[in-house]
Length: 276
Image 1 (cartoon, rainbow, N blue to C red):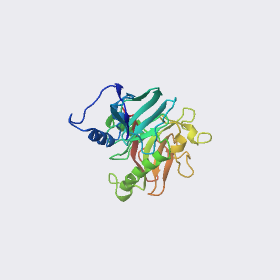
Image 2 (tube, rainbow, N blue to C red):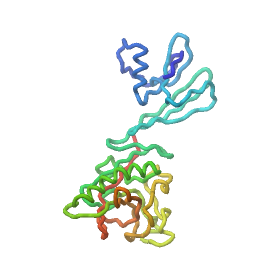
Image 3 (cartoon, helix red, strand yellow):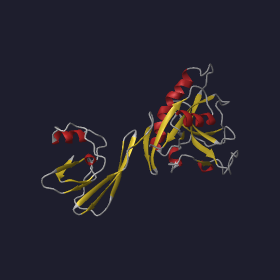
């Protein structure tokens, strides 16, 4: 916490979470323990020798002593996101912040270049095709859609949660049938020009289009299995994160099917939505 002289000049929606008899030190400690406490929820501070205000900053950050630039940033947690801006016009510092956006229950937040995004990996109760996956995300999981994967961090996150789904398939029968591998449905459909075409130039990620509204770099999050996309299972218009074992997994182009002829059961999907 940074403490300096000053008092509020203007502020909005103040809250008083502590008893009126609370000391200054108790107020500071309360704010310090909150992950998203921003300047005690004050927006504008001016200098006053008799009154004090406190600002919470990152432990690795510093406050500029004099700057004409507007500073912008965000404060994320695993489930929430709040943006803010800081500006200085002598003798006043102005702190502004947006509404706190939160993910639906059991979704995890990721910060992307185009904005925050929430994801959840779902294990279905039976082998499911892409159509079922889309319906399940929309109807049962906060009106979400099939999520894309923006980068390596998102790929690693989804892969880690896909391995237990593989274990379900590998260690016991699914609806009395034993399968050898699984797949997790993700965003991605062949473009109209490449639909039902498996040969060049429709055998690369550029042949796919994405509905995920904040996805900007699909090639970084779509780590393909060796030799893929390969046009199998034809017509290979869709994409799954295929898991062959705990150490062998990656993107695979496939057909809109629940079960493959090579022993696969697509038992999961990644749902995504913007926080609100």
